[in-house]
Figure 1 (spheres, rainbow, N blue to C red):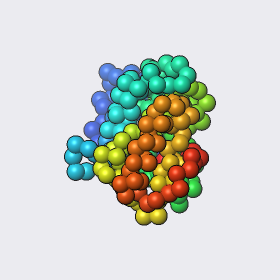
Figure 2 (figure 1 turned 90 degrees about the vertical axis):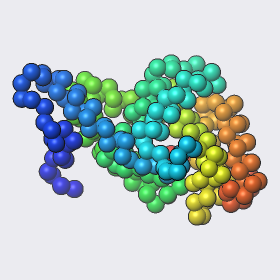
Figure 3 (figure 1 turned 30 degrees about the vertical axis):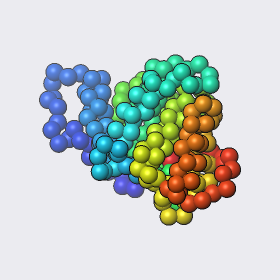
Length: 226
């Protein structure tokens, strides 16, 4: 890894040297830099267009899902806090890149890559905000609160819906079976029995229709990558 500072988007058109205080300058620099999220493509296909979604679209969709589906959380959640978690959870992919859910090889060093990216990206902010956003990101990754567990459930449910609408989508990834899909989506059940029941129904029906390779239909275990 190069010791040279990473070029920032704001470097293309630097802010004036005066008239903007240091704290605000750092905040604006961060907000410009996260525009990169719109360029990070995911594997999931859009429903409304013939292309893959990007991370910014994914994060927006999760925020909407939190507001609409919060009533199905098995534990009471703070909706505003949960929205914060889903809006920032993929920001690290600006530097770490997207890791496809079913790419086990790419997932080997995912945690390390994303932790380094979090330090670098959130470090653009003033120290207090950098610490706050890093704590939120860690909360999501560790799923130690009801809000984080529900946020993670939305992160797994959203592409499930897109794949259903695409008659399988990434469920058709070579080597992936319906049981693999169940295993990677079972984390939904950690936050909502109702939503996991619905998600499981879609996966089972997708298997029946031949949209994924046949699996035994076991409950599966949740995994962390993707």
